[in-house]
Image (cartoon, rainbow, N blue to C red; front, top):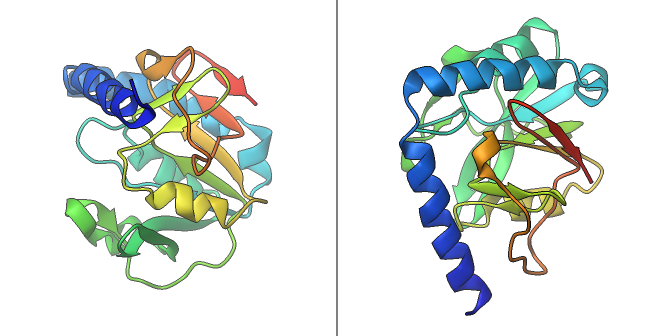
Length: 185
């Protein structure tokens, strides 16, 4: 079976499982993830952080976004600028976010400048910190262009698999944080 087909099958399986989690389960698990994230030295030392605004069954990030702003760090949120392309857009407050590409909350298209840490969603991650996204290539293209940025994937425990099928353009995370563990590359 080819890599793309294996990726698509894995996406269907993991997303189906994620969709079956209740909002309460996601909120409880996210609280543990945010506690771990905010205790990481990488995040504590960061002056600027890119973090996604969650939708649907993703790991909820509202508390993380608030913590970043309250900590005096510069917050950037992904904003789609075209086919397979996104930027780190400056988000001065959560009130600046409005539905953008595919209904995902985005700030206005004002570039944030360099980011020290990127908190990245994913459909699945593996034990070596490889990431499987939704297949649009937005995060891979963005992250490949900022190699000095610390990349932290976040997901629920059941989204971690032993090994993902990978292609040369797939960008690995430096860390993956779940509700019960931190994986480091």
